[in-house]
Image (cartoon, rainbow, N blue to C red; front, top):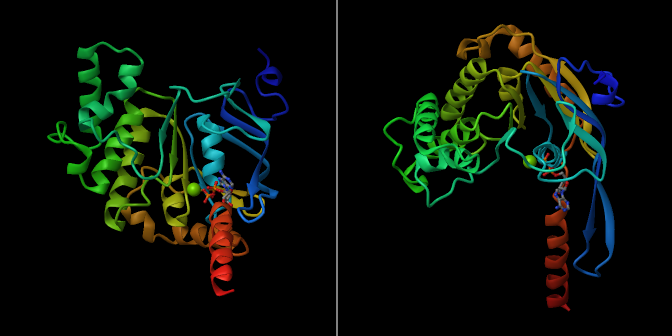
Length: 296
Ligand code: ADP
Ligand code: MG
């Protein structure tokens, strides 16, 4: 198959491109709870992005710029209003086991132990029991959770739950890992150690990672390239190459090069205000109308 057929309209090289998003638009129809009127809200407009094989790409942008909406589309959990996303030249039409997903807030199965959570994807793939045990142990060890295999999620700290979610996503060996602010809910120190662990895993397993964050430091520390999103409507504003040496360790965070690139991204984000949550806005108008009518 020629590269033209594989990635129609894309100039990217088929040998290096893993994910190609082409002219993505996403419109939400927001219903006012006051008068049932529908208004259109364009969350994402004409977004184009190519992620290379084995690349660690971070997406940064203010709250509400469409990061999660875009990641959900790559995951196949949401559909663009128009435009297409390809993985290995194949159009994404829904979720599949070629993509591991780590979303915000852990989303572990509370009734399953650590081991059973990690084995979930392997069960779906019908991997035999003894192989499942072997594979799950490998990833539990990789994320440093040995001796916690039989614990339930409620018996773990936030950072440990996040490690389980990462082990679960990695265990069935997806080529692509999609992570949506995975470390947002843990304390700063745990976050830094999870970042270092993730880099270690990525260097070992050579996966393609798309990592959404609103943390500039986090993006610079982890990524090969950082895609900076603009708001209202959401789109890719600029892509910054991070030429910091690898393997990266804690010391790099205080280097001059790190500070320089962090500042460059910070400047790009300066004129990008956070977007108010449209769903909350419609709830607010209901609250306002209730308080107004109470006054009357
Ligand atoms: P981010 O992850 O960058 O914070 P999101 O992708 O969650 O942003 O949201 C982008 C915009 O789309 C926001 O303004 C949000 O309010 C809006 N939005 C997201 N989901 C919906 C929905 N189901 N209905 C209406 N608006 C939505
Ligand atoms: Mg989000």
